[in-house]
Image: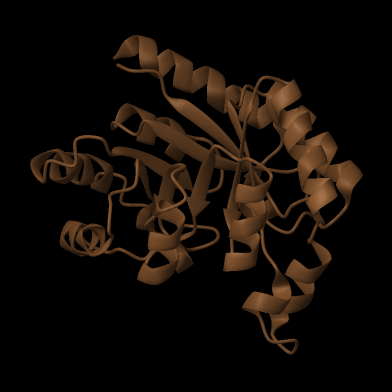
Length: 247
């Protein structure tokens, strides 16, 4: 089996605290993540001020200098830096600071104009497909893009996702469909929103080549219910490495 890439999703668990963001980078690196991911969102571009998410994402914003600082920190640890832009201005910022890869969130996957703009940036593009219920829907969406992304992430956009709704067998179906449709350069991963580590380990055994899992510093972090502490994340990574050997 090929090497499985593990992505640690810090997202906005830093809450806009740059020192906490740096601490989470260190924890993710120590836990064995190979890619460390954030979310880059300009709240004024995405939400109305009376939206409940506006204040959350507004507080979590960093300026360009801070993003450069965080990217340098990640790369100094020999890890890959990744972020999900929530809007065009955030996409421009990420491209401007020299990212090598871009992640598209499930909520943006069917925004064809936005996705095509991302694909035209010429970066490794990863797209989450949390709203796709069937293989047919995924293939149809794929064929609506001007070019194919390098990686798609199977996931369920429910936070947290109950184990009974994870439907991880879909990973195998998606993998077969992608190969059957001749999307030769597209790999499949799994973005995990199920509490605990079992689902991520299972997905790795079912053929996911990327595993993405949230990481947290405290139980008060924004995405704490779907996140792991550093020591839990390390156990997950160690188990995934065993799965690689078993297969």
